[in-house]
Length: 364
Ligand code: ATP
Image (cartoon, rainbow, N blue to C red):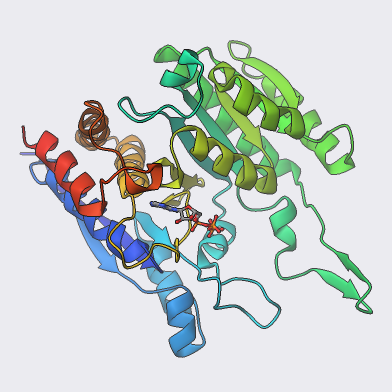
């Protein structure tokens, strides 16, 4: 008889639309894992974020962090509300604290277009987009968060931090990911996206990339300046495979890439370190649509699938990986007929309708 292991998931919905999309994700995770023999998921429901800060003055209590840090994985909705800010004007962002404190250096942002959705780019080659952004998520320009120097109300300074150990782990992650994707038919190429022509910190980033590339001779390695990449992502994104970049550049280009596949509600993410990982949609709390039932839950659901895939890999649980594939395939099949157009794309498919369409496909 196989022993059934229990995987503890810390669930942090957060703010805004997170309360509408998280229940959908949990329900579908329940559907695809219910029959698993080798593992079961249990959930610790935790609170952090802007609404909690508003109520208590603490956005991320230490005991909440400790419970999350002890979990096998963390599933997060979205945190922050524009009107709730720290005294220095910054938004509440416990998700950034998690990335830094748990050393989640590899921000994985898969960009895949679902069949059946309205085209964003006219070129037919954009119909099957499938590339990945790996955003460094613990340092870069974000390392300066909360430490900006403002002198005499005249000059403000933030500092970009690039360190060798983080870069080495980041680039190795990107090359290993490209190797995995190559087995599934991708070109096997990592592009270092930087600003090495202007900033010394970025030249250092590129230098370490080139050093690590030599350890992965089967994978092609090239470079692009970040401004050129912004252009190319709109002109010919189908040429991309794995793009690796500094934190702030990744923040910006992953939103641009989400637009290429229909909107923020289609873009999942995983922030992965050597021991911990957080899974959350790329988007924020979307206060402009919160409470209306119109949020697209797809990014949240696909982030749940990424969590199952990662848990399956690190705990050697083929059943978890199969569950991840089932969930992702159900999302694809639900959109494929072309009559499930999310509200964010001008359609009428609200949160419930998308949930029900995916659940129907799962149970077919
Ligand atoms: P953050 O900086 O916290 O990532 P943001 O300022 O980039 O957040 P979002 O909350 O991601 O902003 O919202 C950007 C736009 O995308 C808004 O118009 C929002 O309504 C829309 N949006 C975000 N997520 C979704 C979703 N799941 N479904 C539909 N629309 C969404």
